[in-house]
Image (cartoon, rainbow, N blue to C red; front, side, top):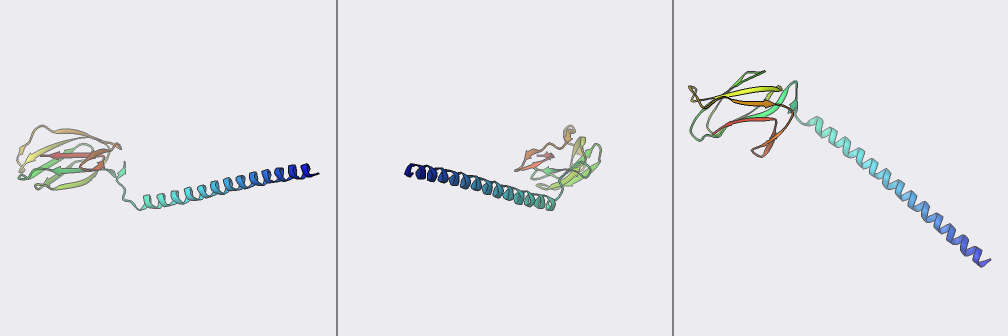
Length: 141
């Protein structure tokens, strides 16, 4: 009889431990799902509040930079869109361009062209430039 009681007690404890483990696993899984859901909702709200910088209809964000310390440069961008920027020494300008192939001619002090036009592509791919990720960039020293 004593052996039967010990066997019953051990069997009961093993089943109780298994039930506790299953319940713990279920609760941790449920908690992880709730945490994931909350993180996902937070990420979606954060994304909705951010300005659009990568939209093929509105354009992909890029930057034009005049790295000169003395000269004004006139950047003329030609391609699917035409843009022109007169930048003072050290000045920069962010702009959105629709996807495509562009060329940029740079004029010194509004008159003579500096070098040959630079060909660049505006795509969804990002590039690391001056400590940021941008879709395109143009600069002159």
